[in-house]
Length: 286
Image 1 (cartoon, rainbow, N blue to C red):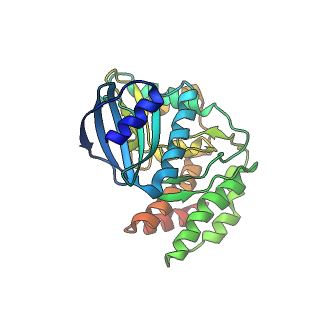
Image 2: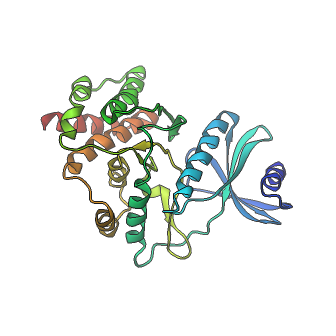
């Protein structure tokens, strides 16, 4: 941690002497600590040195979201390697609980962030979704991007692991059917927006973190908010008031959450494969 303090000092230009560090639970991929120093409190993520690039890309994603001045994210400070481990230092935000109007603010602020448009679908860096690689080559056609670099990529990972899904190729061939009359914009996305990646600060303001950012259909973020819960009616009502969802969203959200169920199968196994197959069957029945 003393080496990390030196990196903070070099970045901020302020003397940063180590005081203490205490572990923070809740994550399943990285080790996290609250770092107390002479220049303030910081949040530190650590992992194997092979995670250095992932931390660098996360830093870029957080900065891009912060630059929109829409929804709060932890400010990235610095990153690198120390004592044989990769690290990422972020602003430490004291978390509180949602208050009156917190969910409404989250919905409105997310809609405003989504209005930040990219030059194409994808991003300037590949990143990860959980611990899975997520390719982001710039692509002008959303259906092509989503079919090849999201669903197709996950189906291929599953096949490599010995699991094939009935109807996968048929679904990929029919993707255009789910976008009739709907032309998505390449919105700036959080990319991994489930209930565990949003919190509320001491003033009950929403904070999002742990992004898997790229430019894509905004409905993908909204779909994932429904997969594990944690977002209430006020959130969706406020989002729709700021930027209404298209009438085809109830069907497309199944298509978008299929990506996450496939990823969870590839990462964890369990019953996720059965859910993914059920979604494929349901979509092909439309």
